Length: 295
DNA sequence: AGTTGTCAAGCTAGT
DNA sequence: ACTAGCTTGACAACT
Image 1 (cartoon, rainbow, N blue to C red):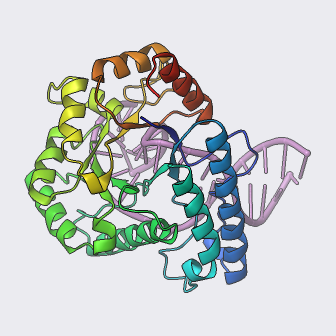
Image 2: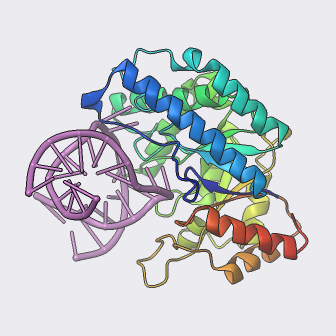
């Protein structure tokens, strides 16, 4: 079981998600930004190694505008060495990484141009992980998409779009249950038909479910992951105190986290803590696991 | 130096 | 009709 956090480390003084405005796009600016982002990614992974955090979500902003028509630059070629080096570091230290395209990536949209842009964005994500030289256990996580007032039709569009995806995307794509539209059962149903692994989001599951316990849910999701996919990835969070329903907490509630781990024993999976204060909560979770004799 | 309007992109639910 | 929230604020112009 590896513990991780998404995208940004708040204590090392750099970010691998620096960007700039489309209006100020230039090849020079792109090279300068990606260069500094890659440097920071390496620094972040070194911090993670030193602190026993072996799971990490790489930011989608690593290469700004990578899937935008304005970008004609072959960034993967230009930064080949840096990507390879960081990839070797990841592999040498037996780290697991993932990526999570943002909310604009919706492959079941009825709008053809939205789908087209979404696929381009997925291809970009796959290219980052390919450039790092990582195998198919490095995943890209996505939701099923919108409902548009007709779930069966929306799922049908998803299936059609999924089948047309490039192999480089398909080998990494996993689908995550969301908190309002598509439950774990919806994802499992589509997975059975199309063959992708299902990433389990425990907090979304608390918001939207079909009565499965955490243990049942983790078991069901884990069964969709084959050897080539690696072990199940789980996104974990809990309710923000006083916040509206299904808003993420700013700091880990260790009692709830330990309860979740105990409830799902002895199933093994990697945990991504989707919590605002990032590595601070991840460190606490890692120590809690150690005390439980599980890391 | 600090503040603030705005930024490539979608969809849902709540007001 | 508008906006917060999502997984994540930060760029860049202005004071």
